[in-house]
Length: 316
Image (cartoon, rainbow, N blue to C red):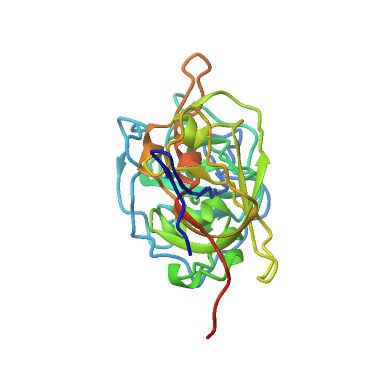
């Protein structure tokens, strides 16, 4: 199979995909405690979740508060960092800082039962609670904001728990696009981080647009670029989601927002999430915005580093 490269005038292809997560936090009441209202749900350990002791702190992320200090969370309440979590009670609140003090802004709207977050830091012990920093998606396929939530009550009642993800070994993805796409971008980031992935995908050009401020680097975070979408080839199991990738400029010469000219078809795609450039993602300073959420969105983008037309499998 001919390998395409677009660099120095030579055709080449790279596709990048994005994955995301949803977030939840305990609701704040009229009292100084952030405990949620409604009936509390009980929580039991879920098979297939990572060890709660694993912690990976995103690069170049500002400290949330100078006073509370990170400390091990009680095992009964711990969440896994760099993983997807979900609320198991209603009316969970996110805050700007890991404290119930007046300096911590109380975010609206409150999170409902079953909403997902991507955990990026923690735990921090403060005011009798264990706090985790998360990216909340509020049911959408991109982070809406970053913030802190308490994982449970002072009495040990759990409010948020890890989500079991159907992570496959990278070598098992080649003919199973659905196993990658159905994770969503947050789940794919949790499962694979920056590990190289190789898989078959139907590649279709599209004009994919969205509203929002300008973000740099544009090749990784542009909201209005003409790009490609990845879906499952018709002979493979259909996927519930598609992937919209980015093109790695280290492998493709992409001045401005121009991208490789690629005929629609089935390709062998190589790429990864959590590109190193994600740590540099910035919203236009004249507009402002949630920098941690933007970095998270960039980390959840699949960046393709190579692509080849797929001619089929020769059994002979």
